Image (cartoon, rainbow, N blue to C red; front, side):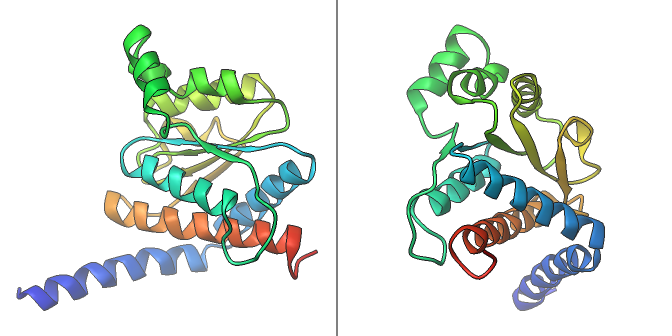
Length: 196
């Protein structure tokens, strides 16, 4: 296989996963319902919390940036906090307690009933993410999970489980940021644009 064939194969694989999402009405409805819940959270003066490890941490930070700055519409800032961005907090919790508490502890510190947590895990089995979801549910915080594979441990404990139909981590991550952008777009339209 030459280099261009490898490139085309990767693009084709990515398109195939996105087509599966496109054709899954249940999954599309879950994305829409999660977006509505985040819009409700903002309309009631609450905030969006996000967490994930590795590439999923990058996605959490990316989505938070779209909410605080803007996505497509010139509008007021929306509060969003990605828990991986404060290295002093992350390393203090990891050092003083254990790594798997890095998000759970921040949910406890920053979360309030009425907030929404977006938890991102390609496998759905990341213990630090599972603990964050459990803490959020204990506090009355709605949980939206971006997952892959079979949804893992996060699927059944999340209020809205958005499971990308793939076992390939790269394809799952590509779909997660697409879904994150869709959520940002729907929230902006609902609050400031043509879905009011």
